[in-house]
Length: 343
Image (cartoon, rainbow, N blue to C red; front, side, top):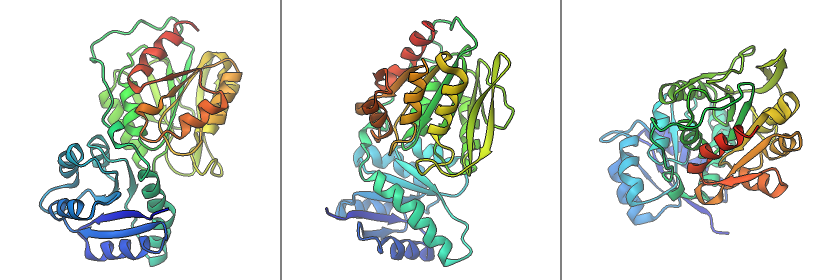
């Protein structure tokens, strides 16, 4: 198998050289070039035809987000953004980036090497197989268009997503109205960014969105997003309602928080009063949990291959028999309401 050709775009000479040195140690990677700014990057893309580009958001002459907006329509190239803790990363995802990593505040060479080996290399390899045309293929309904009211208020919607999921989740939930049953969501994301993502969705949606804390009640018109880091989110039944618990635990399927952990808890706590949705992402996290939900009587939806950036998690779930309905991204909200009103 041919190595993945990578273009590194970074204005810091020191960080750029460290990236090149460490990425080049992996036999599956070949760094074909570097660039200090978007203009050099554009020329390098034309000359070197890389498979994947790593991109700093803060660059001279033109910022990375503006560059992405101009680049992706002309040269659909998988891009992994390297960003400091800033909500600008979500603008980059909206502009067409496949994924992002948090820029490390390194105090030693070993920390940087660990970051590149355990985070950046993994993202580059996933991005090399991503379908770039699908990132912008998110058909949105008019925010004012009315969905039928949900007849029951004690239902639960559980959502899991990974690579490409920030845009996919947003595309789905922005179509929900303020009467949507309580939503619990795991989106694989570094610590700190989940809070920014929740605030961003809170501004975009017609219901409340917040980063989850232990004891938060799951209520109609409220979405709780699991915090990134080293803790899992569990749904627990309290009286006639539900709340979440955020508890430390080992990684499951390589992730913490894990979609499987959330879905398993939803299967146990809510049973047939739940609806599960699994969206784009690499690997199989959430597939077994979605199957547990379906076996407990829940309704389930999986994103179809044609609209996934990475058809991994939904495919594994579908192959296991966990997916009741497979839908294009633009049709998931409509299917959600149709199923909720049959429950």
